[in-house]
Length: 164
Length: 164
Image (cartoon, rainbow over all chains, first blue to last red; front, side, top):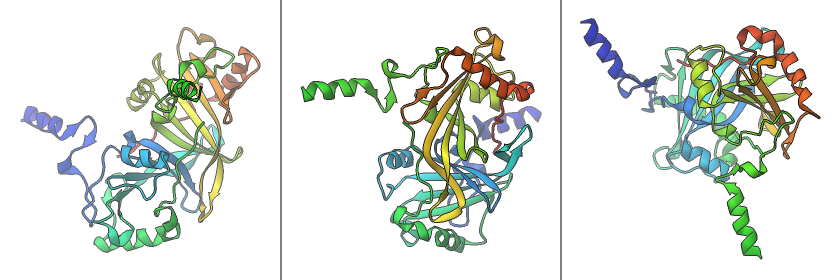
C-alpha cells in the first residue's frame, strides 16, 4: 500500500513541478504556470505601500519580445510577478530581502481571447496553498483597472532591466 | 571594409553575450560571467542606504545546492548580484523599480583556490563599461570583510527565496 502511494506520489510530482491535475485554476480558467521561477528575470521591484519585494519573470516569448522592444507583446507571452514579504536582513538591516511567500500573479497574452482587457488574461494565486484569487471571473476588472494607467506600455508596469 | 567590420562584429557577439576576448577581468583574475542574466533567480533585494534594487542569480550548481539546503556550497558555484539605481515608478510611485545599471558582482566558489577568503573569489564590474573594481588583488579584503558577519551562512547574505 505504501509502495503504491509512493509510486503515485512520484507520478504526481515531475521534477518539483506541480502537475496539471493539481494545478490551481483562477475563476477565469487560467491555471498556474508551475515553472515561473525557472523563467528569466524581467525586473525586481519593491512595493513600499504593501511591504512586498518582488521579481517579475517571463517565459521565452515574453522575454524575447521585451528585449527586442516589441510592443504590444505577442500572443503566448506570459509574465509572472512573485511577491514575498519585505524584511530587513537580520545581519544587515539596510538591506531588505524576501521573507514569506505572499502570492504569484500572471499576465497571459492572447489578443483575441482577452480582447476586453487589453489582450491580457490575469490570474493571482495567494499564499502557500496558492489559493486562486477572485470569487468569479469578474475579478479581472480589478486587475485591469489598476493596469489602465500603463495602457501605453501594453498595460505593463514593469520594464525589462538593462544590463551592458 | 564595412562588410569586414560587420563580419567581425558578428563574430565578436555570440547571441548577445560578451565573448571571451572582450570579457573584463578583475585584478584577481576573475572574468565576468556573461550569462548571469540567464541564470535562475536566488532572490531580489533592496538597499535603502545605497538606493539600489538588486537581483541575485546563480548558476545551476549554486541554485541546486541552495535549493537542497547544502552548505557550504560546492566548488563551481557562482552567484551574481546585479544592482540598478532604485527609482520610483513614474505612474505608480509606491513601487520602486530598476533604473540605470550600477554594477554586477560575482562570488565564485573554489574552496582550495580561495581558501583565504572563505572559499570564495570575489569580483565586481562597475557601470556600463563594466570596469573591474579594485586597483590590485587586495580589493577582495574589502569584499570579504563585509561578508564576515555571515560566515555561518557560507559568507552569503542572500538566502534563496521560497515558493510553494
